[in-house]
Image (tube, rainbow, N blue to C red; front, side, top):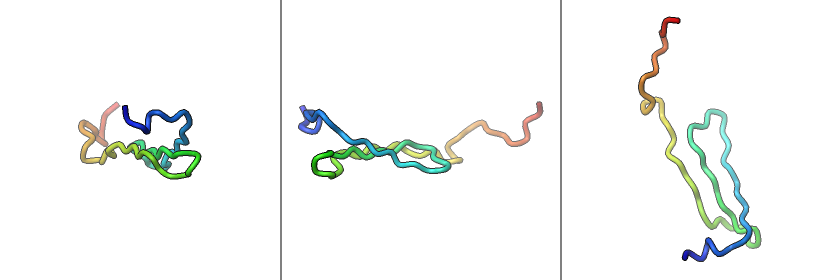
Amino acid sequence: MNPILNRNVYFVKEHVGIFKAANNYDIYDPESNKIILECREESLGFSQVHGLQTDDAF
């Protein structure tokens, strides 16, 4: 097992943004205040969103 998973306490910091299309987190060791893990999700660009039309009729 990975030694990072043997810890009992973690500090999780989320990266915030106004038009955030992806979730990003940093996992810290609270004793040393060092990043022990980075969690990144690919952002969704407008070119990756399919099927959106701006002139839809209601």
